Length: 248
Ligand code: NAP
Image (cartoon, rainbow, N blue to C red; front, side, top):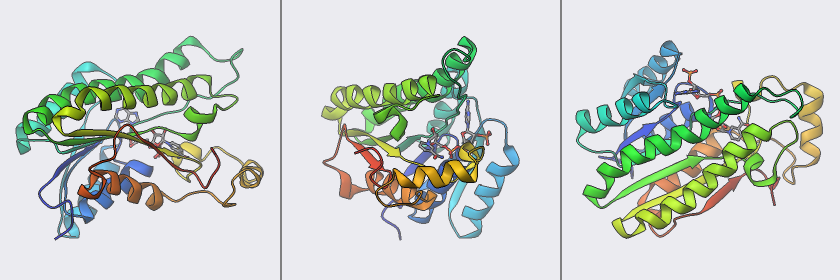
């Protein structure tokens, strides 16, 4: 029996990278996990197979959470299937990096819609159900880039800073209903998202990280699991950095 036994969790972008790690960790602690993906059904099914193979419960649900229809279908479907959502992890995210002079307005819009609008849409839909239960956990995956800013990421940093504002405002709105809203701000983590960085860029990044290395998916996932747990019941509106000290 894990500490999340009986809880229902939705992880957006749970098919790969950090979202996959979060889905596996929450399931390992006993939660029933809805593993959302946009395109990569095979990867999402593999996460579900890994969870069920270990004795857990999970299902894969395809939905583009940057759209109102997709977000409502994902959250509405989960509530219908399980009667509740206890934990929402807004993790789905993309990058479309470039210096501002070269960045297209479409690249700005796509990143804001996928990283920020999706979290607003899914939170809006999930909080409705959480309010009825007078309990719930919303955990937004922001980034050190949203805290510090990053050259070449005006779109991404804006989306992640926006997530921090969303986190704090929603925490104030729904605190009285027993719902906590927090953000986790990872630094560099090895996933498909960061796979375009060269070995040289990786080595350079280590110089700016007090702990001298990148973080692991598991380190981020364990932090999310803590915020989802009863142990974190009095924490809300907080941005928890998992960045080896990079952003301080
Ligand atoms: P990743 O490996 O590229 O995975 C992205 C995930 O998001 C995939 O599961 C993808 O689904 C899903 N996704 C993308 N657009 C979607 C949409 N419109 N609707 C539903 N799902 C969508 O990325 P990652 O590195 O794990 O990043 C996960 C989160 O952590 C992101 O919010 C990212 O900004 C944040 N983060 C990452 C790092 C890092 O160093 N990696 C650092 C700080 C913050 P498909 O498989 O279907 O494409």
